[in-house]
Image (cartoon, rainbow, N blue to C red; front, side):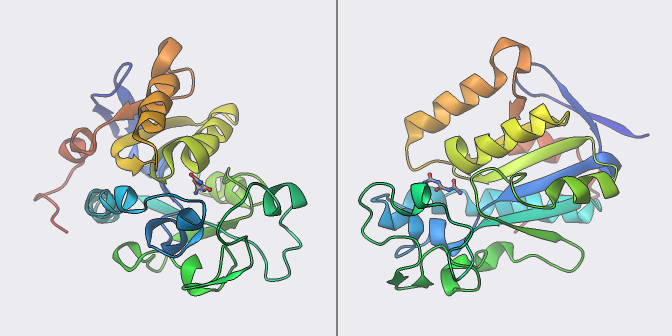
Length: 229
Ligand code: TIU
C-alpha cells in the first residue's frame, strides 16, 4: 500500500495508484468539435476545447505512473434501439440523434463524431466504455472492469461537468467509490453550471466527492520529471 495524499476540497484526498482508476468522460468529437451533438443542442464547443491540454497532461502523467485508465463515449447503436424516445425526441435540436451531420450520424457508434479526440486517443490496455446514458455505470460493464482491477478510488475528468461527469460521479459514489474530480480537467457549456456542480459535489463534507486542481494531483504523483504534452 503506497498511499498518496493530495490537497483537495473539502479536505485532503488519499488514494493508492494501484487501486485508483482515471476515468475520462466523453472527450469525443461529438461534444468538443463543431458540428456534433453538443453543437446541435445550441452550445458553443470552444469552451470545452480549452481543457484539452490539461486533460492530456494528466492522462500522460497517469500513464507514466502505470495507473488504470478508462475512457467513455456517449453514443447509441445505429438502429437507435438503445435510445429511448424520451431522449430522442427531447427539445428542438438542430440535428436529432441519428441525423446526418458534418461528422456523420449524430451520437451514433462508429461514426466520425463518436471518436475520442486525437489528443486523447486511448492506447492498448486502456478500457473504452460505450454508454447510452449520461452515467457511465448505466447499461455498461464499467462496474465489472473496476472490480476486476480491485479499484476503490476514481479520479474523473471530461465533459460536461454537470451532465455526464456529475451523473457518473454520483453513480460511483453510491456504489462505494471515493471520487475526485479534477477542476480544470472538466468543463461545461455553461460556466455557472460547472461552478455549481463543483460546489455541490464537495458540499456537506464531500457528499458526492472531492475536487482539486490538476496541479495538486500532478505534484503528488511519483514522476521523475514533469510531464509535458
Ligand atoms: N457527455 C455529456 O455530458 N453529454 C451531454 O449531453 N452533455 C451536455 O451537456 N449536453
